[in-house]
Each structure stands twice: as structure tokens, then as C-alpha cells.
Length: 297
Image (cartoon, rainbow, N blue to C red):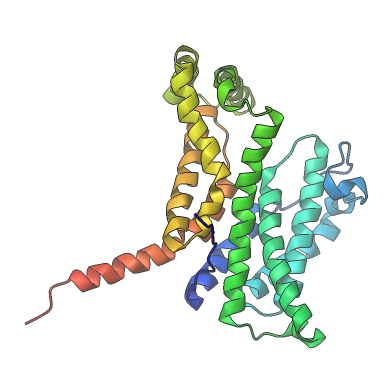
């Protein structure tokens, strides 16, 4: 079977809502302030750039205002390339500083990749045209669709990379080491309780015992998550494939959250926005209901 990703012919209103929800997610996910005056464990560009100036409210405040303006321009497709440049720069800078404190936050990574995918499309379009198009408010539907497609590619690539990393780090034995997850689940829930007094749920308590006593069945069940990540690119086959795959990925994250108390709301939000596309499903449901409505005599 030949794999062929499809650029879905989204309607203009669909893409506007996708951009609006994504812009809101980036804004809500960006820090209000960064109280880090040092980079003890440099991460990413922090190896080469000192981002500690972001800890100054006088410096970071105007940057947040600039980010808000950029998000608005991104949503309405005005000065798209400069807007995406500001968004990407802010996410990378804030993420580099926060991730240089000794712990890694995945929020900035996936947001940055999704922004980068759209930035590349916008930059490619600008390079094909004249320099004046950098600030051109006119944008074709085909170019918008290509930008949304690039965002989806970046999102599913994150999952595929995660699966490949698991296989590489475990030398191909990840599936057969499922029993090792039992102590990890206990440790993760204990850590959450010590840090935030979060009581583990029934599933979090039952899962380790089930894994220890049923290693083969557990391997089969848990390997489903690995293959779901590994073949995430199947979400690019079409509109319904994206919606179904998005729901499966969100369900996987929910299961992980209940078992290990590890939450990935950023990835879930991105799946909802770019894969599931709830506004379209609601619109489709309404249209179907109107068709089934009995006509007046």
C-alpha cells in the first residue's frame, strides 16, 4: 500500500477557528513571568545564548504584549511571517530558559514545532514571491491549507519520534520490558502525592499489580500505545483518519494520566485542534440533523 498524505481542503472558517484555538493555546501556555536568573543546566539554544534577561518584568512584559499582537495577526492572517517569527522566537526563548533549570517541560517543544511548520510554509511562500509579500495581508486558501497541513505533520512527527526513541533507547526491547513499568507507575504516583498531595486513583493502584501478574497480556495492551505513536502519520491520510486518530491519541493520554498521573494537556489540545477538529464535527452533526428533520407538509 502506498502512503499518500493529503492536504485537506478545509473551509476558510475551519482554518480560522484552528488558528484561533491554537493562538489561544499558545497564549495560555506561555508563562506570565519567568523568575529564573540563571541557566544552571543549559538546554537547546541556552548553550549559546543567555536568556536570563527574560526574568526582568520590564523586559518580559513588553515581549508578552508583542506576542499577543503577533497571535492576533497570525489568526487573521495579516503579516503572517513576522507574526509567526515572533511567536516562534518567544516560545523558543521562554522554553530554553525554563528548560535550563534542570527539568524539561514539553509544552514549549510541541508548540514550537507546530509554529515552525507553519513558519516554513509562510517563509517558502514569501521566498517564491517578492520581498514586499512579507507584509502582504492577502493570503490564498491553498496556502492556508498547506500551513495547517504542516502543523499536522509537525504534530504527528512528535509522536513518531517518541516511538522511535523508545525503540532505540531500549534496543528494540521496549515491548518486552513492560514489567518494568510497574515500579515506575508506583514511583510516579508517589512523587505526585509528595509534591501536591494528589491521591492515586483506583486504576493507578491496580495497574502495577496487574502488570506484575500478567506480563504477557500487559505487553500486548501497552504495546498498543507504542504502535499508535509509531504510526501516527496515518492521521495525514484524510479528514476522518485525522479525527479518529486524534481521538485515539487523546484517549491514550487520558489512560496515561489515570495510571501514571502524567499529564500531557498540550498534546491533547493540539490533537483536538488540528486532528479531531471539533467545530467541523459539530457542523456536520447539525447538517445531518437538519436533513433528517421532517419537512412541513
